[in-house]
Image 1 (tube, rainbow, N blue to C red):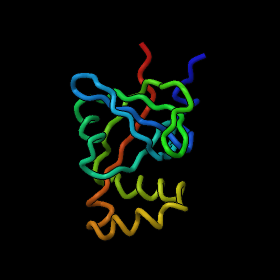
Image 2: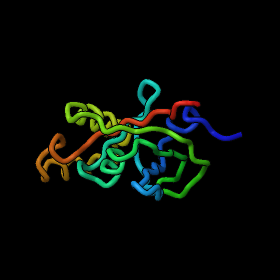
Image 3: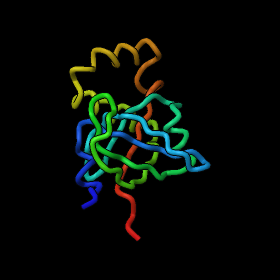
Image 4: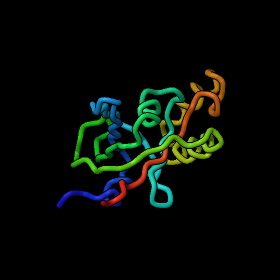
Length: 130
């Protein structure tokens, strides 16, 4: 049986696939936090995934290993870039979940101008059923 969004979005390591305007898939491993039935992701502001989500909200998520090796079938979902006012909250949630890596990304954010300036937040939820 094919996995559902609920089966996948709580996983610690996920592969998020966004799509170009002409439909080409662009997969990238992400760290996210399940929150109220949705997946929250912190990423660099201006990243290609945020640009592609602005063009088309269709994404897929699937289980993967820490280095992005696929471990399951993709699940259709929709994503949106959250307003800048949500960036800090999502960044803090992701930092709490992956605290052992915070030593690496918090100083980077500070040096580059602060979390609110250099990060963006993405919200992913189950695709509507037809």
